[in-house]
Amino acid sequence: MQKKPTFRMSPCVAHHTKDWKQSAHFYKDVMGLDVCEKDSHLEIKNDPILMYVQPNPGVEGMVMEYVVEDVELAKNYLLSHGCEIIKWEGKGKDCYMKDPFGFTFNLWEEKK
Image 1: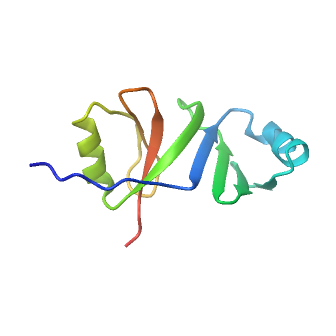
Image 2: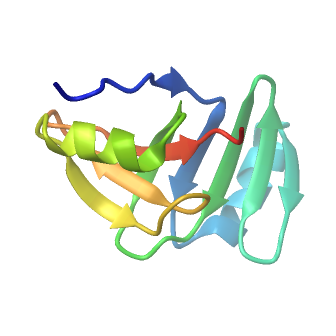
C-alpha cells in the first residue's frame, strides 16, 4: 500500500509575471504593501502571507505552496492520483504540479 504524505498549506505564494519590476509601484504605492525589490523578483510581506512576484518561463499567474516531509514521496503519490508535473527542479527549488482540476501548486520539503 502506498504511503500517504501529509500536506500543509504554506504561507508563501508566487505570482509569475514578465512585468515583475513594473508591478512594484502598484503593490507598494497603490496598495501600500511592504515591498522589497531583489535582483530577480519582489518579496511582498503581508502577514501571514509572503508573496514572491517573479518571472518564471512557462508559468503564469498565482502558484500556492504545500509543505511536505518528503517531496519525492509527495510527487509520486500525486502523480498516481492524476496530477501532472509542470516544472520539477527538485528539493529546495521549484517543484510545480497541477492537480486534476487545474490548480497549480509548488511542493516544498520541510527542513528536518
